[in-house]
Image (cartoon, rainbow, N blue to C red; front, side, top):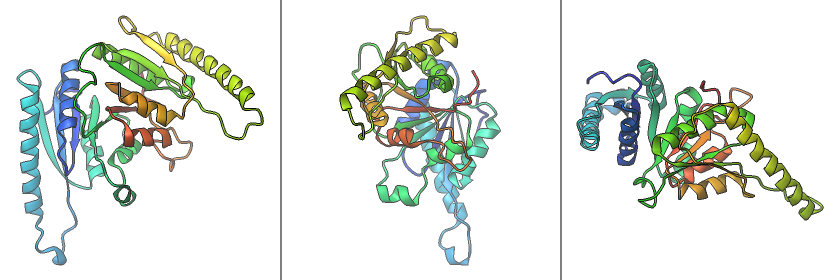
Length: 298
């Protein structure tokens, strides 16, 4: 295969069709004037006498055919102006993808298609997104299988970003502003809050919660100003709804072109690198979800 352009949009394919991920990747590449690089991973099991009927060469042949079909589909979507390259990988999915992205040196973003797995299958098969989130500093986008473009079909697009702690959300704010500007979209920065159920005086607790929400909104606006980002043409609104964060963000995804979230930053290496809120949003979101590294430089 031809060598990918510098800083391509990378699409990671597995054993399922990924038309939505390919379409998102092509749109993203057009916005940035770069190429699309398709990585197709064939999960190759160790061979032994007990697996005589499953030959590695057959697995590779099937994989090459799947890659060819994906590249043809991607080139049909991209047209003449967007270069499309590809590479076949054999081995364990996360390990091979991490190595392949590292070989590129400067991938712009890695795009995966969200698989609608049953709860049981998720218990026995670790999420590829979670595995990559733990080992890559490149932004990741999870695209729902049914994604067919921005909702509504007309009017200004919407990018929504979940902001937790403002002073630790620089990467999220940068990515959200950049995504909104590239799409000509409105930007909503959401800091959701909810009350614990054990307060002696619920009305007093709500007043306190609302006061903290106003304070957080001001902190978000202050941090946005301190980052000195290019906000020309970007309509930014800060929202502080009273709702569980994951529930509010999933609701927002139904009207959004993109959700932007920060990966979890665990204090110990064995902690989750997605986090409970992002994990719930990834499972249920109706639009693509962009996960950024909290330590990603500006």
